[in-house]
Image 1: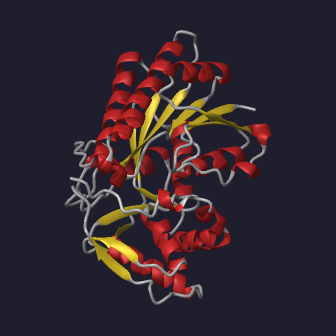
Image 2: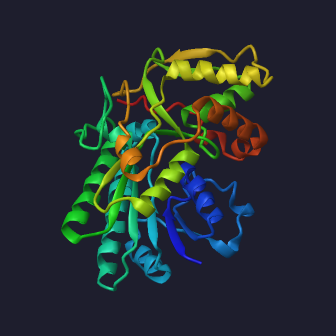
Length: 340
């Protein structure tokens, strides 16, 4: 059985990617710090014959080096990151430590392991937020980086480090810049699971400013297929945008979610109303990716139509209510990102 390492494999995208790889009969080693947003919900159902969880901070370079040396993976998917923009506004330090320093330690481990003829491919997962506010059109892979938040700046810094190691040390690596994901196992501080949870519990639906900010959305299952395609076909040194082309204003997304819930017979309580709240500092107005490169060069394209994926996501949260119930409410209820 061939080995694959996923860093941050207990996060939202990481959890789904680990499940995807297990189904493809790889032995998956999940390296995760197990922070507040880590997903422990699925660990009991995983077959330990082809899955191993190792608790580790990727800033522990010596331990990281030894794990990679021992398992000699075909590929490392780097998803270890702090991701919530509002938290980065309140406290940027953890984002610098994990997203930049952590990526540096991973790259250093790979650089040193090359001398021992251990050369796994690195698929580094980044974000569309590194491009900043896209007023018009769509950002392709040559678009200038203009990050707006400490989160996106830390991801941009990590991307630049990866590119420098590719050029200077000839590492075999590719970068994925993806749009907003949705689907199973997403931590409820993020928009879609937060709205679903509030609808289920007859609570207000807080929307920043007037809800006019636009985001591009992709189902996490499509993203996982794209990442696997980058492992198989991605050209060394290249960056690939991974998007769906489906943009929605936040207010329209919340209204669409309410409509989906009503169509499913889910009761909408009297308190479940949209409430506009104070915007966060530096809030980008619009993200939009040009994903023609991965479609044309690697023949990948998203398969899940947004309305269908949104309904299936609601169904998943209905069937797995314990997923959110088992998360301490203090970890996601308090409004963050208002500090100046």
